[in-house]
Image (tube, rainbow, N blue to C red; front, top):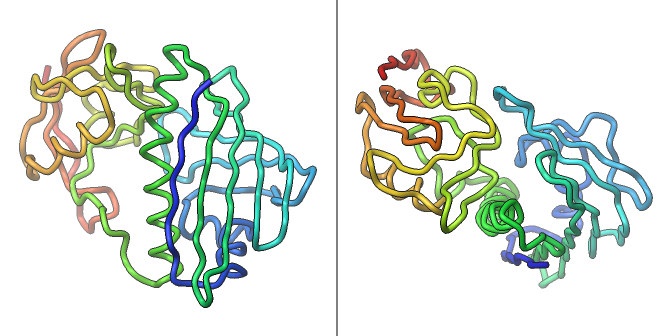
Amino acid sequence: MTSTHANRIVRASAEYVWELWTDRSALASWLFVDAGESRLEEGNEFRWTATLRTDRPMIFTGTVLQAKRARHLRLSWDLDVSGTTSTVDIEIKPLGDDAEVAITHDGLPESDLGLFEANGFSYYWPDHLDRLAAHAERRAPSHHHELHIGPHFVGGHPALGLLVRGVAVGSPAYVAGMRAGDILRTLDGVPVREIPDCDQWLMSRAYGDVASFGLARGNFSAKLVPPPWTPSAPQADVGE
């Protein structure tokens, strides 16, 4: 089994950080999930669904194993694409008027799928903590990409590429034909093996560029467009 870890100093009280994790409307404001009737109280099951419309809904489920107010959440974690239950510990440590938030994700298997997951969570948990801190501190996240291509990844594999978990409907990748379950091997012919490889590629591209997506099942291309939240964003063109 393998694990990932991330931590962040948040310029907000431990009580407020706790609220951002456990209040359903507060959670939706920074993590962008619909918690439905889920409550993060000890013994409860939870179900979070990503609010972005994708070709396959992205769902997180589990059970609250431990809940110590403004101190510690321990969750069993079931990713919808995985057959393995892992464990997520969220520690909140008061630091005067601030708080340190640490996330440890244990129990990810050392299989091919486990490698995808471990790589993904090692990327996503720091990103989520950045979003949490930015929301608590009322500022924009520090690493937002203006360019939007559409895929959301389980994670990367050193030999295989990036496993696609879901694709935003209407995005360039979706129009090109990429779908959940695909493995992305190259972008414009350049191998991608970790999610930051995709981030680095994005920084070299611009609106209107035609991008080539090399999937395990073939090559597809589409024109890059502004994110769907940009006013009057055009639709992507597709070629093959």
